[in-house]
Amino acid sequence: MSRLVVAISREFGSGGRLLGERLAQELGLRFYDRALLALAARESGFAPEAFEEAEAEAANKFLFNLSMGGGAIRDGLFWAAPPVGDQIFIAQSKTIERLAKEGGCILVGRCAAHLLRRDPHCLKVFVHGEKEDRLRRIVSQYGVPEAGAEDLLNRMDRGRANYYEHYTTSKWGDVHDFDLAVNTTSLGLELAVRLVRMTAEARLHGMEG
Image (cartoon, rainbow, N blue to C red; front, side):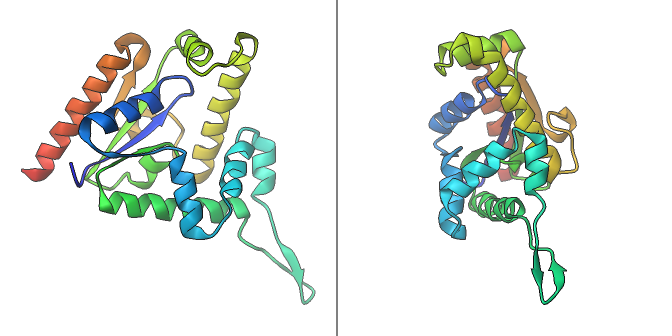
C-alpha cells in the first residue's frame, strides 16, 4: 500500500474520522487528522494554535472573511500582506502534498481531496449520513450534551463548508469531486469501512497493474 493515499472529507458526526482510523489500521497506513496540524506547524514555523484558530474562525463566515483581509501602511502606501489564514492554508497544503508524494497514508479533511484531485494514486472519499443518526453519534460517542448537539453539528458543517468553498472552486459535499461517497446511516460503519477498503485495494491493484 506504499503509494496509495486516501483523502476523506466528511460531515460532522458521520463517523468519517473513525472510518479513516479503522481503514488505516486494517491497511497499515499512516493516519493524519489533527496530527496534520501539528506536523504542518512544525514544518512551517507557525504556532500550532494558529492552525486551530484558523479552523475555528471558519465556523463563522463573517469572521472568517474578515480574517482574510490584511495589510499595513508602508512609506505612505498600503501594502497588502498575505492574510494569515492564507499563509496557514498554503503551509498546510505543502505538508499534504509532501505526504501524498510519500504515499501510504490517510488524510482527513483540510481540503486534501481537492488538493490531490489530479493525483492518480489518491482515492477521494466523502462520508455522510442522515442528520438524526449523526446527532446520536455526537451525543453517544463524542460526549456532547443532547441539548447542544444540533447547534454544534450545524456550526461544524457550516465551518467546513465555509473553509472548503473559500479555498477551492467547488461546493463542499459535491459528489462529483469524489471517487466514492458512502452513507454511514444506510450502510453502517462496518460495511462502509469494508466498501472503502475494497475500493482502495482495487485502486492499488490498478496502479500496480
